[in-house]
Image 1: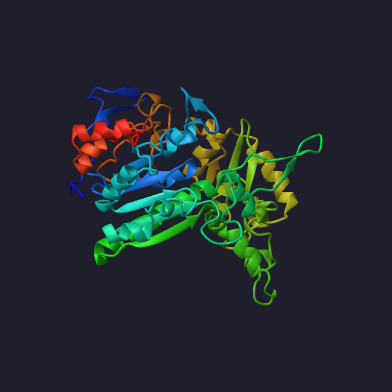
Image 2: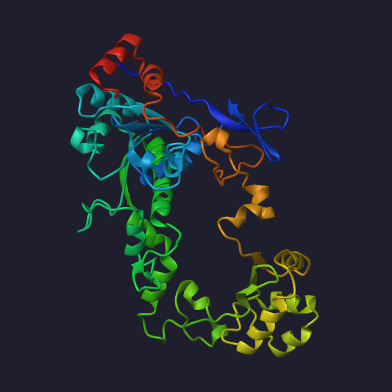
Length: 443
């Protein structure tokens, strides 16, 4: 086996100064080029066999500097055509989840394809199986196979329902993990037909985040001990874990009230778990403004006093002083009616200005569409423009103080980097690569 022990980072994009040439959007110029800072995960290499949304398990790692090599079967990841919108013939799902990665096509049904995968894994930190568990093992590329070649290998499997349990072999998609975890409630249209209501997708986002955390822990262990590990994450488990507050509250309420109560400010009466318990709140509630809505969060007595003083209604504090902490004035319909009229007297921005002046917690109530117009968003979440990634995308939220993360490359075409990877990482010469093309190993 020929191995080349080199860790070459692929070309990246970086956030350039306004004097550099590049794509300029608003106050920022984005330029493709060498990294201006060494990214935190520079030198980490991940070999990923992935399909669809689970590919997101390595997206953040790539953006933090890891060299993520996406191994695709001939024909590629059909996630390029899944969901909507389709941006210039490629789905936004694929463009987002695979940005920052390189792609190589290897037909793992061939001996040469399996051999090349093993050679890549021999000098890698991590192998990711982002598909049904056991898919790689059936090709002789499971954890037990690869640790014989690379004892430090970290092997992560991410799937829908995990490797065990009665649902392990069921085909599924992202929303299934949220319905399983009790996150989405059925809705009904005007004709009485049941439908999936608008919601935030938890499982397909939380699963990759937990999986990435596990990968990093595995790398630290491997570098400290010389031993890798085999981990798995189910997106359904991750959805349940992400919504821990509600499920753990329900579980706690199974105990007698003598042991588990509500807040002192609620006279120890139990509230509905999670945000369901916010419905009757008054000092912690959304209110209509003259041009939109605002979130009012004066649950601490000090903040409530500041608010009353700021609006010239100290009589409200005298009449309804509340408790020191966590007091939402739950069920106080008299105060609710008064605050409803008060908040209608200003615009949302005027209330935000008021909050800063009078040290009162207030927050905008945005939509996924209007959020981009918010000044806080514009200051911290500059869009990475479509000229770089193929679609306008949000940046990685991690910020390096005194430095900057590399801007990821556009999601790869199927097999875009096959020749490059085989040459750079494995030392294959042009003739050997040409032979693999002829045999169809590279698609």
